[in-house]
Amino acid sequence: MKHLDEKMFAAMRTTQTEGAAAEEAELVKGAAVGTAAGATANDAPEGPNALGPVDVERAFLRIGDEIVPFQTVHVLDGKLSLRLPKTFRIMPEELARLKYPSEHRPGLIYTDETHTVNLAFNLTSTPLNQEELEDFQEALTRMLRSTQPIERWMGEGMETVDGRKAGTCAFVIPTLTSSVFNLMFYSDLEDKALLCTFNCLESDMNDWKPVAEAMLRSMKWEHENDSQLPTSNQGGVRV
Image (cartoon, rainbow, N blue to C red; front, side, top):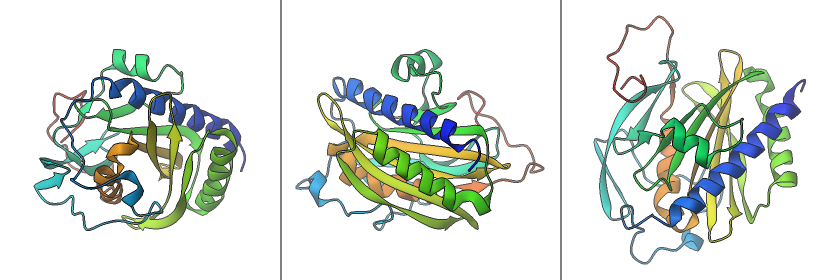
């Protein structure tokens, strides 16, 4: 695809800095989000589409040892909506610059209170439509596997979300002190490439992987002429 390589390399740099961010935050993680008793990272189902019985449309969801409230959040100027934990907040710009030093950092990053669980959105300027999405996925996964220090590749897939084709891939990358689980989700929005990346420490993967998959599958492409919704105090993002 024309102009694809430049955006792929930018995506690689974004993924790499997210892994570094999770590694730094591990030092202050604490016990805010626990892993279910007896679970280990090796117990997690393989493949990005191995979704467990998780329903993020519920008002509350048990994640590890915590009961977490969920809400619908509108992002990217109201062009998309999805279900997110109410405990997630937009990462402040100064913290984003520190943890994502690349100039290609995502435009919007949600994070939990420990800064070890992150969901980033990047609406790029790269042209992309539904017909090109499978080629986009092939190029992305090929470049990921050839440029990233991947410890474990968990698979890739193509599925339908809100009536649109969307691709996913999942993998674990090592850092100096831990390993980081990454789930990438990509589709098109307004004929541009939309990249969403979830990551957390591998030790939390059992708890968060099925939740992340369900959050991304809850995504809806909103019509531009929808009625205005009240805005929150989180960087103008509508909830």
